[in-house]
Image (cartoon, rainbow, N blue to C red; front, side):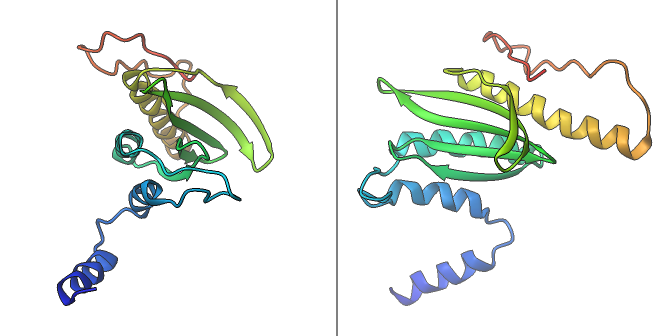
Length: 169
Protein backbone atom coordinates (compact mmCIF):
# COMPACT_ATOMS: atom_id res chain seq x y z
CA UNK A 1 0.00 0.00 0.00
CA UNK A 2 1.44 3.32 -0.98
CA UNK A 3 1.57 6.25 1.37
CA UNK A 4 -1.12 8.14 -0.57
CA UNK A 5 -3.45 5.11 -0.55
CA UNK A 6 -2.92 4.69 3.18
CA UNK A 7 -3.89 8.34 3.67
CA UNK A 8 -7.12 7.83 1.69
CA UNK A 9 -8.08 4.75 3.72
CA UNK A 10 -7.41 6.60 6.99
CA UNK A 11 -9.56 9.54 5.91
CA UNK A 12 -12.29 7.18 4.72
CA UNK A 13 -12.41 5.46 8.10
CA UNK A 14 -12.94 8.77 9.90
CA UNK A 15 -15.26 10.32 7.30
CA UNK A 16 -18.64 10.93 8.99
CA UNK A 17 -20.40 10.64 5.62
CA UNK A 18 -19.16 7.13 4.87
CA UNK A 19 -22.00 4.60 4.98
CA UNK A 20 -20.76 1.20 6.18
CA UNK A 21 -23.69 -0.54 4.44
CA UNK A 22 -22.70 1.09 1.14
CA UNK A 23 -19.17 -0.20 1.64
CA UNK A 24 -20.54 -3.63 2.51
CA UNK A 25 -22.56 -3.75 -0.74
CA UNK A 26 -19.51 -2.66 -2.74
CA UNK A 27 -17.54 -5.54 -1.20
CA UNK A 28 -20.01 -8.14 -2.57
CA UNK A 29 -18.55 -7.62 -6.05
CA UNK A 30 -15.19 -8.82 -4.73
CA UNK A 31 -16.28 -11.97 -2.90
CA UNK A 32 -14.26 -15.07 -3.75
CA UNK A 33 -15.82 -17.87 -5.78
CA UNK A 34 -17.18 -20.39 -3.28
CA UNK A 35 -17.43 -17.82 -0.46
CA UNK A 36 -20.37 -19.72 1.11
CA UNK A 37 -19.22 -23.22 2.06
CA UNK A 38 -17.79 -23.88 -1.40
CA UNK A 39 -20.74 -22.30 -3.20
CA UNK A 40 -21.46 -18.70 -4.00
CA UNK A 41 -20.35 -16.23 -6.64
CA UNK A 42 -19.54 -12.52 -6.41
CA UNK A 43 -22.33 -10.09 -7.23
CA UNK A 44 -22.19 -8.61 -10.76
CA UNK A 45 -21.40 -4.89 -10.99
CA UNK A 46 -24.90 -4.08 -12.29
CA UNK A 47 -26.43 -5.81 -9.26
CA UNK A 48 -24.19 -3.83 -6.92
CA UNK A 49 -25.17 -0.55 -8.59
CA UNK A 50 -28.90 -1.37 -8.42
CA UNK A 51 -28.54 -2.31 -4.74
CA UNK A 52 -26.82 1.00 -4.02
CA UNK A 53 -29.73 2.86 -5.62
CA UNK A 54 -32.16 0.94 -3.40
CA UNK A 55 -30.03 1.71 -0.33
CA UNK A 56 -29.87 5.41 -1.23
CA UNK A 57 -33.66 5.60 -1.53
CA UNK A 58 -34.10 4.23 2.00
CA UNK A 59 -31.31 6.31 3.48
CA UNK A 60 -32.93 9.45 2.04
CA UNK A 61 -35.89 8.67 4.31
CA UNK A 62 -33.63 8.03 7.30
CA UNK A 63 -34.27 4.28 7.38
CA UNK A 64 -31.92 1.93 9.25
CA UNK A 65 -30.53 -0.64 6.80
CA UNK A 66 -28.36 -3.68 6.26
CA UNK A 67 -27.38 -5.77 3.25
CA UNK A 68 -26.57 -9.43 2.64
CA UNK A 69 -25.06 -11.30 -0.31
CA UNK A 70 -26.78 -14.31 -1.84
CA UNK A 71 -25.05 -17.41 -3.22
CA UNK A 72 -26.10 -16.69 -6.82
CA UNK A 73 -24.83 -13.09 -6.78
CA UNK A 74 -28.10 -11.58 -5.60
CA UNK A 75 -28.12 -8.90 -2.90
CA UNK A 76 -30.73 -8.36 -0.19
CA UNK A 77 -31.10 -4.78 1.04
CA UNK A 78 -33.14 -4.69 4.24
CA UNK A 79 -34.70 -1.67 5.96
CA UNK A 80 -35.82 -1.82 9.59
CA UNK A 81 -38.45 0.05 11.54
CA UNK A 82 -39.35 -1.26 14.97
CA UNK A 83 -40.57 -4.83 14.49
CA UNK A 84 -41.08 -4.36 10.77
CA UNK A 85 -38.55 -4.95 8.03
CA UNK A 86 -38.70 -4.38 4.31
CA UNK A 87 -36.41 -6.72 2.38
CA UNK A 88 -35.64 -6.00 -1.24
CA UNK A 89 -33.87 -8.81 -3.07
CA UNK A 90 -31.99 -7.54 -6.12
CA UNK A 91 -31.42 -10.40 -8.59
CA UNK A 92 -30.95 -11.20 -12.25
CA UNK A 93 -33.73 -12.73 -14.31
CA UNK A 94 -32.38 -13.59 -17.77
CA UNK A 95 -29.87 -10.72 -17.70
CA UNK A 96 -32.41 -8.16 -16.41
CA UNK A 97 -32.29 -6.81 -12.88
CA UNK A 98 -35.51 -7.55 -11.01
CA UNK A 99 -36.61 -6.90 -7.46
CA UNK A 100 -38.46 -9.19 -5.06
CA UNK A 101 -39.93 -7.45 -2.03
CA UNK A 102 -40.94 -8.84 1.34
CA UNK A 103 -42.53 -6.91 4.19
CA UNK A 104 -42.28 -8.74 7.51
CA UNK A 105 -43.34 -8.01 11.06
CA UNK A 106 -41.75 -9.72 14.06
CA UNK A 107 -38.35 -10.46 15.51
CA UNK A 108 -35.93 -13.24 14.56
CA UNK A 109 -37.66 -16.44 13.49
CA UNK A 110 -40.96 -15.31 15.06
CA UNK A 111 -42.30 -13.14 12.23
CA UNK A 112 -45.25 -12.85 9.85
CA UNK A 113 -44.84 -12.08 6.18
CA UNK A 114 -47.29 -9.27 5.47
CA UNK A 115 -46.71 -8.81 1.75
CA UNK A 116 -44.37 -10.32 -0.80
CA UNK A 117 -44.57 -9.07 -4.41
CA UNK A 118 -41.99 -10.55 -6.80
CA UNK A 119 -40.45 -9.26 -9.99
CA UNK A 120 -41.39 -5.62 -9.44
CA UNK A 121 -39.84 -2.68 -11.27
CA UNK A 122 -37.38 -0.23 -9.79
CA UNK A 123 -40.07 2.49 -9.80
CA UNK A 124 -42.37 0.21 -7.80
CA UNK A 125 -39.54 -0.52 -5.33
CA UNK A 126 -39.05 3.21 -4.79
CA UNK A 127 -42.79 3.54 -4.11
CA UNK A 128 -42.67 0.69 -1.58
CA UNK A 129 -39.67 2.22 0.18
CA UNK A 130 -41.49 5.57 0.32
CA UNK A 131 -44.56 3.81 1.74
CA UNK A 132 -42.41 2.07 4.37
CA UNK A 133 -40.69 5.37 5.23
CA UNK A 134 -44.04 7.12 5.60
CA UNK A 135 -45.21 4.34 7.91
CA UNK A 136 -42.21 5.28 10.05
CA UNK A 137 -43.14 8.96 9.99
CA UNK A 138 -46.83 8.22 10.59
CA UNK A 139 -46.09 5.95 13.59
CA UNK A 140 -43.67 8.49 15.04
CA UNK A 141 -46.10 11.38 14.52
CA UNK A 142 -49.10 9.68 16.14
CA UNK A 143 -47.05 8.31 19.05
CA UNK A 144 -45.29 11.59 19.79
CA UNK A 145 -48.26 13.89 19.50
CA UNK A 146 -51.01 11.36 20.23
CA UNK A 147 -53.38 12.37 17.44
CA UNK A 148 -55.66 9.51 16.37
CA UNK A 149 -56.09 9.12 12.64
CA UNK A 150 -58.72 7.21 10.73
CA UNK A 151 -56.94 7.13 7.40
CA UNK A 152 -53.29 6.97 6.43
CA UNK A 153 -51.80 9.59 4.17
CA UNK A 154 -52.14 8.79 0.48
CA UNK A 155 -48.84 9.22 -1.30
CA UNK A 156 -48.08 9.59 -4.97
CA UNK A 157 -44.47 8.79 -5.78
CA UNK A 158 -44.27 10.95 -8.86
CA UNK A 159 -46.61 12.58 -11.32
CA UNK A 160 -44.40 11.26 -14.13
CA UNK A 161 -44.32 7.64 -12.93
CA UNK A 162 -46.34 5.43 -15.22
CA UNK A 163 -45.62 2.10 -13.50
CA UNK A 164 -48.42 0.80 -11.27
CA UNK A 165 -47.93 1.85 -7.66
CA UNK A 166 -47.79 -0.99 -5.17
CA UNK A 167 -48.80 -0.30 -1.60
CA UNK A 168 -47.57 -2.04 1.51
CA UNK A 169 -51.00 -1.83 3.10
